Length: 457
Figure 1 (tube, one colour):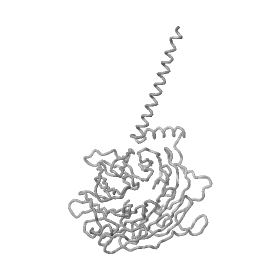
Figure 2 (spheres, helix red, strand yellow; figure 1 turned 90 degrees about the vertical axis):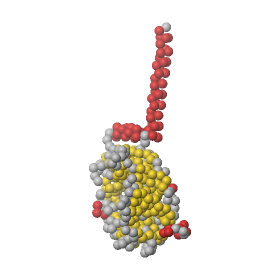
Figure 3 (cartoon, one colour; figure 1 turned 180 degrees about the vertical axis):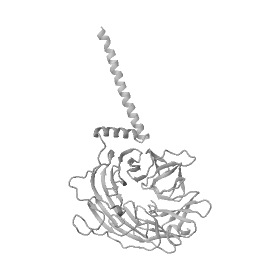
Figure 4 (cartoon, helix red, strand yellow; figure 1 turned 45 degrees about the horizontal axis):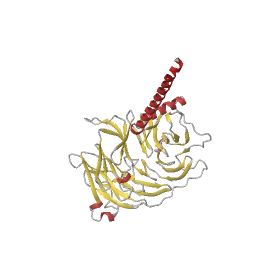
């Protein structure tokens, strides 16, 4: 009888255990759901790193798929186009389909070359000179020789170029199409008024210029909008169709986003301006900006610095993604002052002291990399985890995994001798490299009417 009466108790215990397991599973599932959609995946990332550390027993070594030796004095910079990349030095540019697979080479001599890219195009300008060279996938498209010293330049996704230069008595802004033809020029001779930044819309219809006006007691920031095509501006003075003005503000950075919205970054806030020149949204700042990027045209990415006096502000080192409607779509707390930020369509790479982190555009941590050496750049390629890692002496392509610590680079067996960027001889066959095809479309601007972004990007 006693044994018979204990059976229901055994069933009750089994039922209670099952309910406890189900409760735990539901709780974990709910936690993962909340973390995924509201917590930026931080919990998942934490456990992923913990388990990976336990499995490996130590931080992973960095493995190189191939590398290029760099001359520290050559001012080497890279632009990445998926799996392809362009290397710029003071002696020229080289375009690669991959490590060891050079497609073309173009030589020049610049004192302070600055490289920018947009879509499949790249431009190199001499910030101590008067030359800008624009490239496509197959080589040089056109070269612009300016009369004044180069201040700033920018590209749109179709290869249109805007250039700001400073002459002896005036500033000049010029707009060129993808064939190197001068489309618009604007001269600014007014005392106390300085053009800071410009950009061309991706539909090629308009361009914008940010000005600083110091002619009055308080400085004023203005963004002026102009039509590119004469047919759109028959009844307009100087083709200008809109002005946005901010008193006691400076607007040093502007850039067109997806959908034609212009993002304007000031020392007080971020503003979204429609294609017709009307302010549609604003994002006030309570922190100074340590870093800002408009490279990913879906977002304005901000790295917050110290709080502004008399304002609460965000935690220093917070990364924020502002979408084209002005909403903060994600954020990430880096835990320190951000001294490096590189945005891409796959996410951003930030640097805090000697620790670099790859963060998805959702705000989720994807990987981290600790180094004792100087890192110049970490550029995402076809995905956020595959990067071009650039140091003083070399550039290599590697895969970032979880938490990594810089160690001697492990290269694939049988790797060919790394290519040295200086010189014009192919080390594999000893023959001179072919120069990039040149269009020879050097255009001079209109002296009476001449007025994007390369100087301070």
